Image (tube, rainbow, N blue to C red):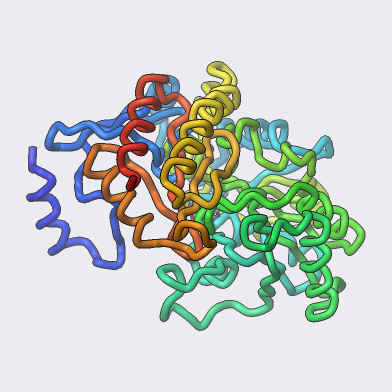
Length: 424
Ligand SMILES: *Cc1c(COP(=O)(O)O)cnc(C)c1O
């Protein structure tokens, strides 16, 4: 087998530079809470492929379902010759997502594609053009979703011009807005929309219930319910982007459930299919069915192998109670992270929910972001065999997204490495 060093050389001559990687090691195999690279080195996985392998890599049920499907047929295109597993995934999503009302789903390949389609559906159903998004938001890398995403570097820089009719308003970010109560933060955002856009022009309000790439920002309690209430009154489609937060990641099936809100549409991807590419828009039947026949789709959307993997993943989440597992991960990790915060003085906040946790790193005694220390801690983790990711508008958030099947021993080992990677 080629070594990581050899592969890295080949990569430089073959793979576009714009596609980066967090670590220079090349993966040979992975399962549970561990990756093994081609050099035989083991890594504790606090990334889960960016919140994708919630059921773990090569989860047994997923492997079996994929193997069985790949032998039956690999692709017919649901728009050409349909098959049961697509329908079954939609049934599952309609039942699992928040909201007791009648729902429909449509399947796609990536999160960005799901977000694009949610906007298409909301615009079509309402006949309105505008989309409201938030500071620090991340919704993808396609042209429309770059416009919806807040951060310039690396996502948007020199990739414009961007799609129009996108309006950005302030997020509730308790650490950085003086702890503004959720209802007041919502009122601030709503006033901007009403004064600068006009509620009657707004098709959709699009929000991550806990922000992902933007820094694992958890809005103050009451923020999401107040926005939900306003959207209902204004005839605006409330779209929850649960692409990173979904499928047991935050200790429940979906993050909206923690605040008891029912979105009109939900975008789903990442954790949905145990690592196979699949995405969905799920929501109110009246909105979803507003679109004319043939208006939604795509060649690969709801590919049968990905659908088989999704059904097996969802079964695994039920069977292993992975929402409970996420809550147990939180209970183990948060005290350790708080101890690191107290010992080092560089952590302004430990935040997140379930197995979606982060520390925001600052210069001691201030709120000044410290991306240099963040990068140094991250590099020290990598050197010691712990795969961690950074995020945040200011590049100063270290985030933790272990597979929900990580063993207690692997989790402890990861936390020990993390602890030692901090200065002081
Ligand atoms: C990752 C992500 C997306 C984009 O998903 P892709 O599959 O990478 O296109 C959109 N929204 C959120 C919240 C995400 O975390």
